[in-house]
Image (cartoon, rainbow, N blue to C red; front, side, top):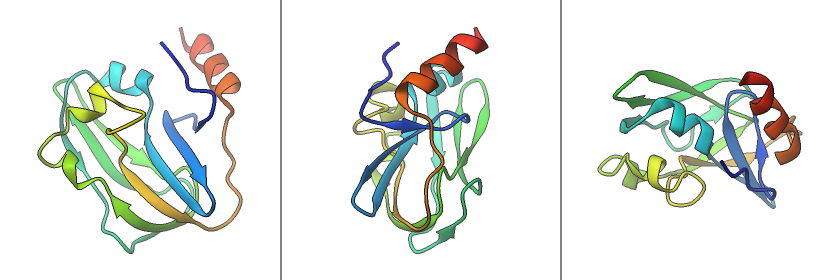
Length: 125
């Protein structure tokens, strides 16, 4: 299972790509693998302000429903509307077309490096 080195991660298996003051967020390959086939994604409203740790939606699979948590504080500036009709993109391309939302970041993120996230996964095995 690959963990892209250019991304940052959370202990709740979200990934973050920060470009300037915009953070793109999705769930990791490990998370989608644990969930199984994704059948529905609950997305937040654009314009909503989130604090780090806030639940902002959920991913529903054939196995379970898993809440999504904001890895950092910010305002939701875009959601991936294509997931409404194609939630399986999270399984097929979790680090690409399966992104979930974009935040305008406020505050300093407290995230894991790819190396630290890999260690977290190893400890969980």
